[in-house]
Image (cartoon, rainbow, N blue to C red; front, side, top):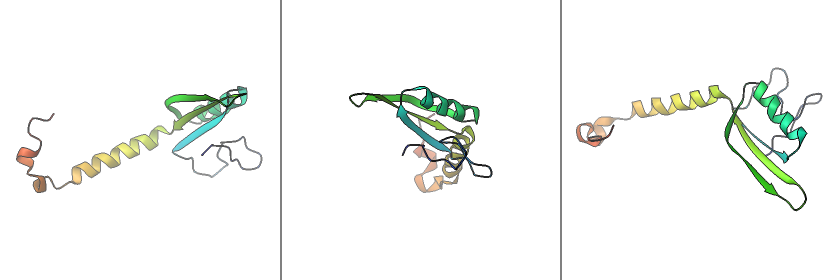
Length: 103
C-alpha cells in the first residue's frame, strides 16, 4: 500500500503530532524530486532504508518503490524471535542430540 495519507497540514507520509510512527513504510511514486523528498523526510525522522529500491516503467513514467523501517522495530522483532526460541521446550526435541553438529 503506498504511503500517501497525511493529516491536514502535513506532508504525505509524515505522522501528525502525537501519532505513533509506523514500524514499516513503503513509498511508491513517480521517480521525481517529490518522491525523493518524501524518502528524505522519512530518513530524517529516523527511518532507514530496507532492501533495494524497485523500479518499473508504465509506458510514460518510471515508477519507483522503497521500503523504510524504524531500527527500533527491527530490534524489537529480533528480540521477540530470540525470546520465542529461548522459550522452546528443548527437552521435547531431545536437546542432547537435536542440535548435534550445529553451530
